[in-house]
Length: 201
View 1 (tube, rainbow, N blue to C red):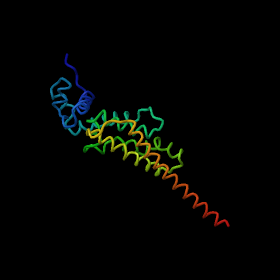
View 2: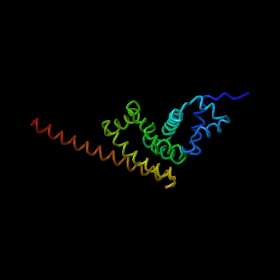
View 3: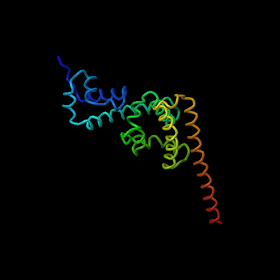
């Protein structure tokens, strides 16, 4: 009895092709070969490669987001940064597909910082250090620049995976930006307090 090929199976096969061989290997023939069928079922369910690719991107983003939000770190943002770096090291082809190609606008960090998700990530930072929502985003942006740089190097085999070093550098950036912002906030508060005192006198 012939196996019935579903859309889900096709998407999963395409996802696996990219993970193992990169985006350049993503075509109907390779997907069909992985499924052990002709190209006909793939072409029946998907009328264009762009339509299929969109579903594969959604599947890849789901996998990526789950990877980024795995626990194990005391600080959520540092955890995301370290997981992002690890993802680039372990899933080079997927990282390139999602982050370093024309698919950049689809998901990943952008999804994590969308208004409905950002509150959960950044509100502890706002509460703990007395930051505004914009300041919390500034902290994350600085942190992202650091861990994205390391991840890009790893994805193209231009660096070795060294979690202790990466974490140390992320913490330097993280604490440095927070200290800078909180120091400026304190000075601003002192100036405002001094101005208020003059007015009351």
